[in-house]
Length: 163
Image (cartoon, rainbow, N blue to C red; front, side, top):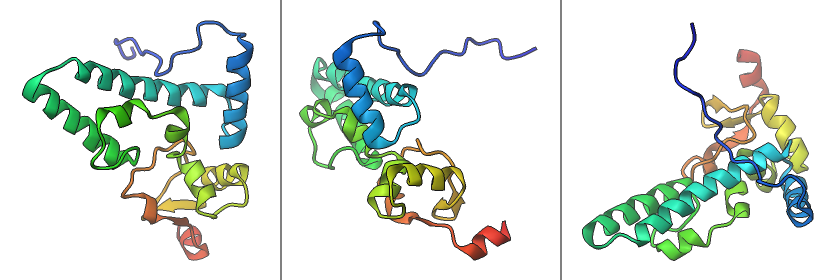
């Protein structure tokens, strides 16, 4: 019959659809990072909003609980490549949307020089030309972890024929 749970959206849309300044900022980011639509941008913004909300809530805690939660959050963000290992909550709160978008597979493929443009990087990923380790990843929005970054490479002709 289907899943009984209510599936909720993973993103928050802007409250007002036509704010000139926001539209201009979004258009610049969409062009700079080669996003397909603004929904991809809003998804990254929602992810960032969740991280920052966690950091703000940990600031209100005291004692051991704060230290434990803070170190867990920073360790998680370090694994994702967003902050350094010795970062503080202020560093987490200073993260911006560009930091999140820089960790997308599409951006990293372009920055490593595996594609001539950000749009060519997206096409190479969707067409299955990019591998992380031994795994073909076809999602340009894949969030690359810090330890996966050196494993990103082009798929060879032999690997393509074998598949």
